[in-house]
Length: 121
Image (cartoon, rainbow, N blue to C red; front, side, top):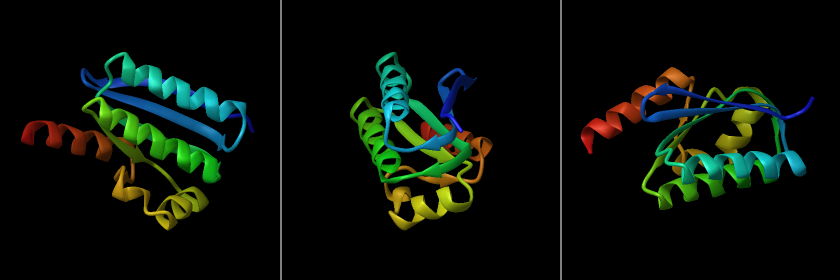
């Protein structure tokens, strides 16, 4: 299965970047990372990475998520990961990704947390 992405706004200041298929070493990983970097550089500061359609992730994919989290934080933003399931969720939990980017059950939960963080700031 190919890696596919989709970007949408769910709030004026919250961007959802959905990744489906497989996120592993290869050209598609570079394309996904570049797409996220462009979103951040274009002004996205509250980003939800929706992994509900992701069926596989390897260490390169996890590393890309870590890199993107650092990139958005350098630009004053926040990133949350939503919808990871099965082996993808287990892999993210194993490396404690939630220490950098909180893991939420779905996009709605991530969105609510980002709104609350913005209200508290």
